[in-house]
Image 1: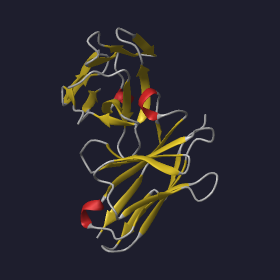
Image 2: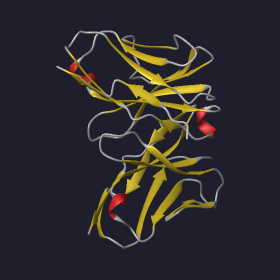
Image 3: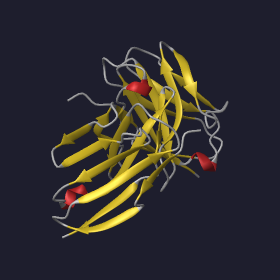
Image 4: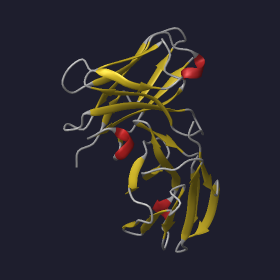
Length: 115
Length: 109
């Protein structure tokens, strides 16, 4: 069964450093998403991406965040200058059609720890 | 923005018991998704609901889309130890989904 994959599974970084989180969405899906989950809290939407551009973003997704689809399979989230409060699980998701009316499938997540 | 509430927050049950949990929203939804999350893993989609009143099953799981379109229920019959995890409901918010705070299920042998 096709699935969303993410790398790395765990990333430890120093405050102020840049990190890139990688995702490979399900191959026939066209809509991609990043969500964040701070330890013990609920899953929060960051950004959605379609046709090589951002279609929606939340207030969490500020100027230090960016997303990119550098090739036909990868979808990346870059955090330019990490802060302590960026420590969280980051989940990539994908869907066949626009997200509000169809299922989104999540990857296993990347645990980001900012020291 | 959209707000989802889930109850109960957590529950401890004996293996073999049935479980019921619910999710309510502050506004009308046209889709409900139920996910399960185990420690250190991503949410796994269990059931998707698209129509008011719809009742959908997936093995021992049954979910219903409330007639008011502001709530949904998830039932698990004859619980087993691997049912342990956090169950999240999610509803559409534009092109993304907003998640509830989750119901944490513990199953005692």
